[in-house]
Length: 190
Image (tube, rainbow, N blue to C red; front, side, top):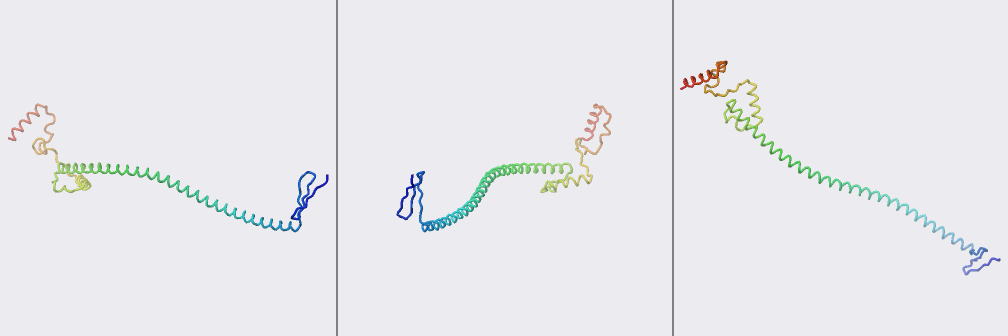
């Protein structure tokens, strides 16, 4: 079988091989032009590849920035939710503090009045000297009186001022003897 060939209009020759495939041969001058065009295309491809590399780098950088911003946003959302919870806790604690302050104030007032009455009763301090004194002032007065050794006056249940007679006379006496003494004392005081 002979090789068949065809002369093309552009000056190239196409030969059909034994296997049935066609091979095209071109003029060397045309081949040079194709090589130059190919080199230009390769240069353009290199430029485009460099641009793609630059753009990929820029994309990766920007993508990392976007991821950072998302992380910051998510953290802010978490913090905002926690802030709402903390706000509720603070409000509850403020309410508790107000309640405790109210109870504490009431207790301090009661304690102040109780101490004021005790000083008036036990140490016979007049009202005008105790009025306007704070709890701390009253505690200082009580402490001072205790340190000076001032003895409170005992209660006067028998009408004798509490200091007379004493319990010594009554020791060892029977209840009947004590009642008799009580009636005799009552008769003397009339």
